[in-house]
Length: 251
Image (cartoon, rainbow, N blue to C red; front, side):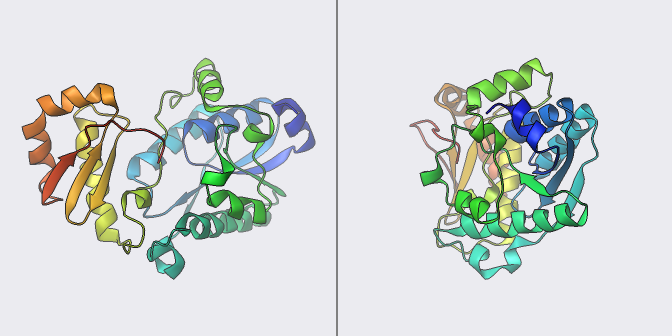
């Protein structure tokens, strides 16, 4: 199956939209292939402000109206307590809400941006998507992350080079309760680093300390700007630690 065949069969779809490369390309190609598509962005405490900004930019570029839904996932004990299967409960709740919005608007099919590079065994959230009947066209059509990024670049999408981004909840150690305050500290710390020119980064909360992960090629810049990083993150964390192995993976 290719995307043309998929959207010929499913001509009216709601899309769980994050503003990342995968869902952005899916929105673009669905519209280009003549499908009616409703992009739904669920805004939770787990997304930093720039994610919604990116989503709005892409929707404007593609020429579709973005539906934004507010949800406080921290009022769910199975999510806030941060168990090993937190992602399952979170995906289940978020996409359950998107499904409600889609059905209310008359969109019978719900899709997401999971691609062929995503390993189902490592992503408990995929179980929730399967249970809700969410389809993943990019995965079904065998499109990998590198291929999608190139297609997004060719399409002129503003997020084609955007690094993979996992939600802020992944910065909190499993078993530690997730609070609005801890998420705020992480978000602000990562914003400080982005303003300094770092891109593909994570700030992990480890107790009251910040554990910074950067790609190996950005480590020299971090060491050079050590004092500036310390000054920027001290309002949020007691100590600032840098992982010298270099960041790997998308989480």
